[in-house]
Figure 1 (cartoon, one colour):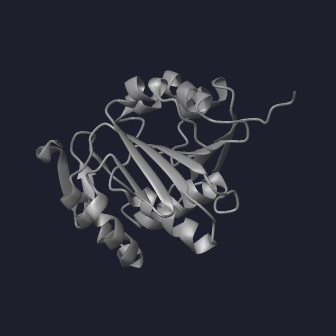
Figure 2 (figure 1 turned 135 degrees about the horizontal axis):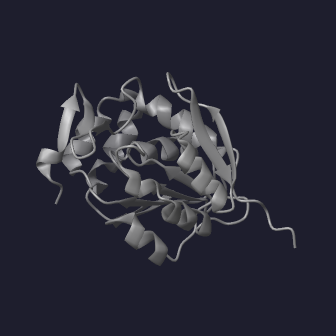
Length: 223
């Protein structure tokens, strides 16, 4: 169960007291998700049946809701696969409270609300899996792969464990040629770790007041 003392609120924005960091931008978390993780991974243009998203840091579920909304809006066929790695899951009540701050996804949030707290569930157009625990332990054991990665841990300065070179190498290993990753951070050591893992890394314009963010891609096979 989550440590109830590990969560505080600034208005309706949840803040981790464990990492002294908000779960998303205080300006507009949904717009941040769209800019960083969706556009940063070239979505929805890359969507296809069976497209696989993986995420480090599930948080409030906002990224999942934004991705599923875009999937439906784009008319993508079939099923979106979404796997998330989360060490400190929020309660369903906390997730619902945070999501209520974004009325534009209210209908979708209400649809998925009964699913929160489950580690696996299926909808006609979504297959969801949460892998709870420390990603440093669980990701190396994961047999899956993802076409797009959302690297959404807390700030590297406050949660360095989720940005280590070893973990970034595992992200790259669980990515097919042509796969991508995106993150709000432009920290030099994160970019270097992704590059050392064999990814092509670029720094681009960040969301809101953040000057830069990072995107990465795995080169296609040449053989």
